[in-house]
Amino acid sequence: MLTTLIEPTSGTARVNGHDVIKSPSEVRKCIGVIPQAMTSDMDLSVEENLLIFAKLYSVPREQRKRTINELLEAVELAQWADKPVKNLSGGMRRRLEIARGLVHRPKIFFLDEPTTGLDPASRIAAWGMLMRLKKQQDLTMLITTHYMDEADRLCDRIAIVDHGKLVALDSPPKLKASVPGSNILEVSFSVTPESWLETLQHLPDVEKVAVQDHVFRIFSRNGPRTTVGLVEAAREAQLTVTSLSVQTTTLDDVFMHYTGRQLRDALQDGRYDSSFLYQRP
Image 1 (spheres, helix red, strand yellow):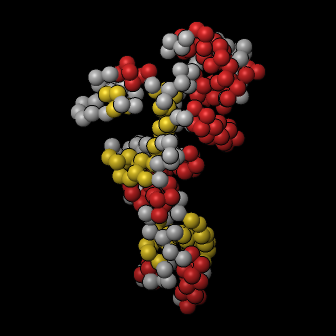
Image 2 (cartoon, rainbow, N blue to C red):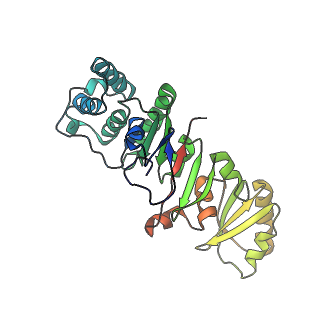
Image 3 (tube, rainbow, N blue to C red):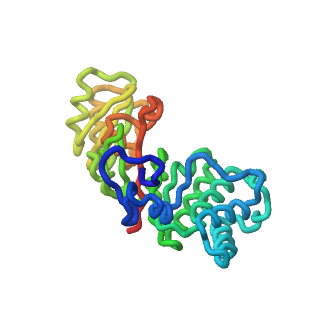
């Protein structure tokens, strides 16, 4: 709806001051959109793909060449300018798509899962490039992604939308701070007595205990103190700890806290719908 592809059934929305229903053309002039699927013409060259979109967006003739060259340098594709897109790797094609979305110098940039399908190295490269472009072009970016580490690294603010409802909106640090416990202990035992959950809930500094597939997740304000208490309690109960890990709160924990299920479960049942908002400070 914000990109004017779908008309709202009710309510209002403005993008850069323009109403998405009354002034869709004005909205489109000031936004760039990168869909999840790659849509560049495979038979045209890298430069030709950018030139077509520069013309579609009415970029002045005298500015086209300079703008295209600057973008090719920014996305590190200058040496591939005259090469057919079909010769590019997946990561290079994604960089071309990003350059294409910026050819008219938009104020707001919408990216739908921009790193889906990329290998880890290409994902990291794409992150770095997006951060540079944000600073260089004074962009506001709105990114949808199911990679929590990507949202944590790129986003100034994050919105979690579950089943069409906004359930959380804040900066990554504040969202993580909203989850009980700054440390999370994941522990499993050889056997677990029925009363063991209550025992864990009374360990030092514990705020919350959850259990899934015989693995206990202990949310603690002080990981080291809770760990010591856990080991002592297990020794007294003559239980064997089969695995133990301590970690800080992540956005995966935030997602589970606000939606009641893990991200992988939401993806599997086909009901996952989360948006991550990346704004200028």
